[in-house]
Structure formats: C-alpha cells, structure tokens
Image (cartoon, rainbow, N blue to C red; front, side, top):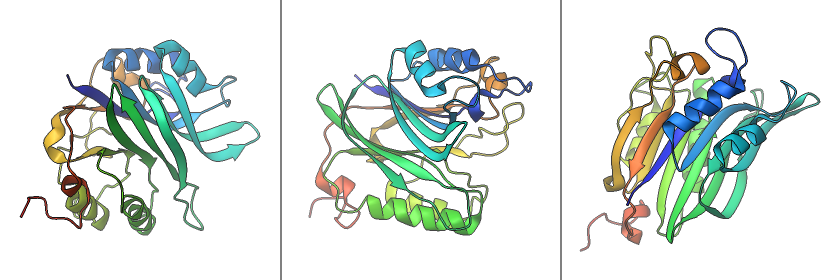
Length: 244
C-alpha cells in the first residue's frame, strides 16, 4: 500500500478573488486527501485565528509549525500536516542576510513501520538567495541513514536552467514538474516534489479543481509513493547506486 503526499502554498488563505476564506483551503485539502501536506505562507493570527490549528482541526491531521516571520500580529511561514506519527522534528534556518527570513521543516515520520524523512521548505525570491539555500539543504542531506527522503515545497525557481534545479536533479533524479502558478492559467512549476530513491515515485500530479483554482494563487502538487525498504546506496550520493 502506498502513501500520498502534497505541497500547497496557501497564500495565507487569500483566494484569487481577493477574499481570505480559510474554509476553502480546508476543503481543497479534503479533496486532495493526502497522508501528509507541506504548507507554505501559513498565517497564524493575522486573520484573527491560528490558520494551521484551524486546518489541523478541519482535517484531523497533526500540525507542525515552522514559522519564519515572528510578528506582533502573528507568525508566518511553513507548516506540515500529517496523519502519521512524528519521530523527530527540527526547524532549519535558511535565512540569507538582506532577504526575507526563510526556513525548512526536517521531519521523520513513522508511516506504519515505514520511515519517511520530509524536508518542507519555501525558498527565496532572488536567484543568489536560492542557490545558497539549496546548498544548505543539500548539506543537511549528507550522512543520513537509509530512509526514503522527500524534498518538497515552493522552490520559487523560475529558471529551468538554474543551478538550484540542476543540483537537486543530480541529488534526487529529475521528477515531473507540472505548472502550479498562477492558478487560473498555470505557467510556472514553482511547487516541486523530489523523492529519493526515485523508483518509489509512482505518480506526480497537480490538483486542479474549480475550488483549488480560486482558493489560493498556487495549485497543490501531489505525489503517490510506494512504501518499500531502501538500501544505503540508494540514499547516500557518495555511494554507487548499484552493488559492485
């Protein structure tokens, strides 16, 4: 039996029609029906309530907060919703001086006895910033134990020939990249999912419905994974991918 994951930039609940309607985001998540969801642009209290807590209650999933901006009006940043048990969790600081603070959630889950590591992030708007942040993420992935690893989120990478995408394709192997932004007429594949080992990726798609086209300025991207054991050589880039 597989597992379904998703990444969704919810734009603080601000829809394409200019209205903040958290209920629409919750309904899109219900449509997606994923086992875990990486969220970006999560407002905690700017609209008068805790968005992540609200989505957790509406979906029945456990919430993990990864704020990158701490303000008097409330926190803002990343979040993760999961149906599986959290084994370990840490927040990574990917901030670059002179730019908006950025970060990532590094979480290991127990998916019914199958370990899964998730890095959920939202990278910066400037090319040099994204290059540095990608290097940080790749360093984080060094010397890890052999568990299936997923990197997903809003990479903000507009340049298909850019170094961040090349580096990530080299580490994870290239995956499909359907356009997710803007919702009405998607042109750019800003929201990405990579899986290592690549062989476990069964399907990757954009969730495009009447509701998802209006609920945010990004469409959710989803992936279905096979739950199979992995070998150390499939995870560590310094080891050969085939046995000698």
